[in-house]
Length: 435
Image (cartoon, rainbow, N blue to C red; front, side, top):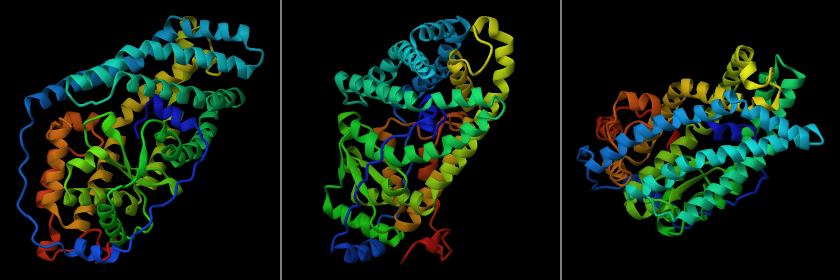
């Protein structure tokens, strides 16, 4: 979970809860569980990490440049709103038309958000549409891309109008402790957002349905039973309308927690590779990564808000003449809050990314210990490398600043070497796995 402008929305947003039913187990589960656990005559040879193609390296290098541009742009736009005094002019415009404080806020927030959207649109269009088509990674039509973009804008506006007034109210009521009270509100909002996003928001963009291949579903449920997960939810989503890349992920919280497989992934990986992918995702469940992520990010929220509180005073005092306001409680200070969030999240991103990489490595280990199919795990990562135009060994700088997962080369190497069961050594997570 990267602390960006969208995370700032997620932190303060809450949506209506929609319950989702669990996927039922089939009568085949027990017999298939025995097949999954014994599975003989597997290929145990190591898998070599191939050199990336010229196209993949071009995508990697241009991606680094684009990442730098995006980081700079996310800070430049709110800075321009501030230093030109334009944010203060929007505030004044809203005050003249808003009859109450909230309606003044609503007018200001809507005007600022729509203007920011228009300023960002050309870069978003290139990043999310043009570039991906240039590298043949996207199936998305322009109408689908633009429609999804407008949906995200609507979600941001609705969520922001519902929640972003609270920090300003707290700043007015408690200028010294607003960051603490805001953090207290942000944590349950984060949990609620994680709870309902899969059920309410995700279906607005793609079609989610229970896994249609009942044979592989039964094998996945058998694997889940060995991992101590009963009544699990496995969904497939038609991401092929948007992308040619491969992915699978754990999402949700509580009753909406589920594993999602892209239809591209289902078509591309073979059965053994899919079972390792599912074992990896099950590792996130069993090892409590979702709860740990919530706790970790809750701590980051408090640190970020406190740092923003300490920095905002000196910045406003130094530039109040340029900004057109002299207090953080002024609605015109919203771009300053955005700017500080971006600066602080960028500075802290290596810690957040390292935390995420450790979880991904643990899930890889769990998947290997659950399936004992190192070769399939490695070939699955190899297919991901090829289909996603990945650089398998991007270097320490890239990993430090940009990567939420270990590099694919590192993951394939680990799949080749991690085999404690072959030398009668104890496995780290054997206590979680049923024979």
